[in-house]
Image (spheres, helix red, strand yellow):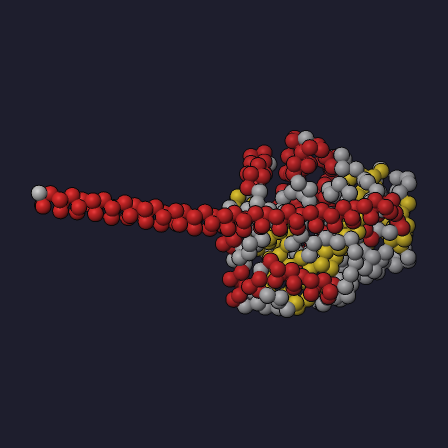
Amino acid sequence: MTNEANGITAFPGEPARPQLTFNLDVDIVVVGGGLAGLTAAREAAAKGASVVVLESRRVGWNASGNNLGTVMPGFGVPIADIIERIGYDDARELWKLSQEGADYVRAAATDDAMRDVALTDGALEVSNVDAGEQLIGRLQTLSEDFATEVEGWQIDRVRESLKTQRYFHAIHYPKAFQVDGRQYVHGLAELAEKAGVKIFEETPVMKVDPDGVRKRVYTQFSMLRCSHIILAGNVHLGSPALRLTATLLPTWRYAALTEPLGAGLADAIAYRGSVMDTDGVDQFRIVDGDRLLWSSHETTRQGDARRYGRKLSRRIATIFPTLGKPAISKTWSGVFGQTVHGMPQIGELRKGMWVVSGFGRQGLNTSAMGGQLVARSILWGDDRWRLLSPFELVWAGGSAGRVAQAFHTWTRGRSAAKGALSRFRERSRARQVVRERAREIRLAAAQARVQADRERAAAAMRQSDDSGSASA
């Protein structure tokens, strides 16, 4: 059931896990029961560690349980930007890790613990502007340099699948997929518990003492001793890690599920995978046969999810006019932490103190990747998390946060303007073609009249010559 006012979700049928009220001595304490924390806990336990997860509310209560469930390789930053920052070789290695994260989610989603995860294939990244040459460059980079299966879709094919004039070219990821995010995070918790992880809910961490070989974690009613602490609490870590929280910009996305739309939905949207635009404004897919699941653009302002539901209804009508303003069945929201550089935070902050966070603009693959990397590093000494070291922790609070918000708003407005300009140019080209065709028709008609006049004059002259010859 969704609390539409604040987006906090309670899941009927999901048993509440106990609150921790006694002391424990374990190998690893994970702070945060979301996708990244549960993955790290499950992987560490599977490798022989004793692991406890402390969740301040309920497993998957926020962004981890309120997402569209799209899983594909890559990050929330253009690959060209990653290459520019860390070079081709390291960028390829990072991309490979992101693909391993996607493979991890697919493997977990097919486990018996994943009830009704509703896995479907395909993701389509559509362009809001007419940028065919840029598309070819990206396709070459992804397929040749990063060994990713992709397809380039021309405008005609895009508009055959999506009946709208808003989109132009597209990149199709046939091996990408999507799952029910809520079912996945709870299935992941079950898999973690099967591996031996102890999960405690309604157990906020009050203080962390990272000094010494054995660190200490304090909750309201307990104290835990451990060798490693994994901070996976996103923007909700609060007082135990204020400096870390200050590196994340709280960002909300709102989502809406329409009422059943009947056959009209298939007429407007023939593609069954996830669709997202290159500007990160809209993301949507068909669920339950004839419903539309639609996510809003990012915003740094928290608002009433029901009000955003009405906005999303209007947005759907703008993109697909034949659908009108569909009735909304449910609305919800999730807040996630977005880093200044746009890449996730994964690695060791100090001896035995780990972070796996900052998944704003990222897909489910990166949270799985981060959990795997940290668990492997702790248990196996795998240090590939250092590939992300160039994307250091950057403060995102105070005036910097306001600047980021203003820049984000300006960027979204600029993207919308570029899209409108592309559509205007397309309409202008179409009108120009019509005008040129009309001109060609008029010119052909005029030439035909001139030719007919010449032929009549020639015939008249021949007839006159024939008449003169007969008289002679």
